[in-house]
Image 1: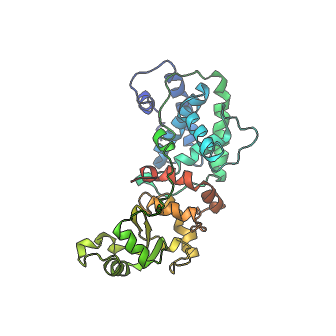
Image 2: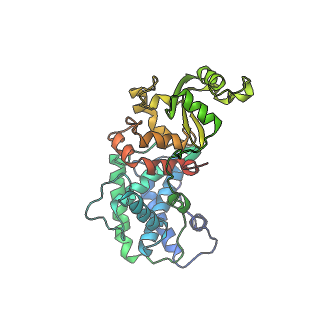
Image 3: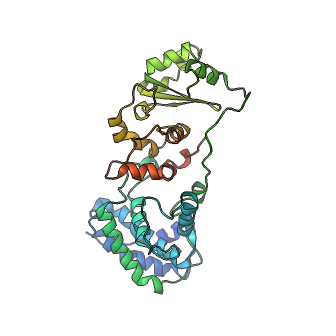
Length: 330
């Protein structure tokens, strides 16, 4: 297999510039020195892993560049996470040896988790952050970076947003909508709450049942185009009525442990509820947020050991990371 190489253009593009600076060659050389190590690792072997190999090598170089400068997107990320969640990183218990102004094994483990957990249209699965191979390879990469930490040059031109976009980091999680005393609500919501006896959630097992509700309780026109025909291919609906309007989550009722939900299934929740936090558009975010804030998703868990605690304790970060613009989206 031909030896891979990362070229300067890839490095400068990640920095959002075309001009080469004095420190770029040093960090690009580091990425290329790491590349064969990554390519020969158990986790990233094989021709089909070439892009991941490059991403790991580049991410490690970007990480070191930020750490040496004690600035940049990595520093922004960990301090934001500390401010919002009380610790510097999701998932990982940090030892007394963790130093936010230097390099750390846990940081590199998180980098590998992030690379192995694609987002958006590329979402396929979630890496186990405690995977044995991941942690062992993080140690290998850490030793390589630690060996050059003191000799690495300080860059004044760091890459923006390579770890997490600033806008997404600082997107505020809004409180759930609450009706104010005397507030006039939309007609659909008033009719919904009348039909639900004031309960904010209702559950429907089929599109026909949902359609019947639209016509008989919400008083919609009994015409195909008026009854959200795109929902006809789904089942297991949750309808959430709040002062902003009605939200409909298709194919998710089986995940909500509500006293009024006859479709709830512990087995299905344990197997698939985590996808609501990871797959864009699968569940309206306000509905997901309502479920978590009212303890209606107690069996949501990642599909690996200790997956329940890892998701339940980090759910807001996970949703923000994977859902992107859908996190508190319109």
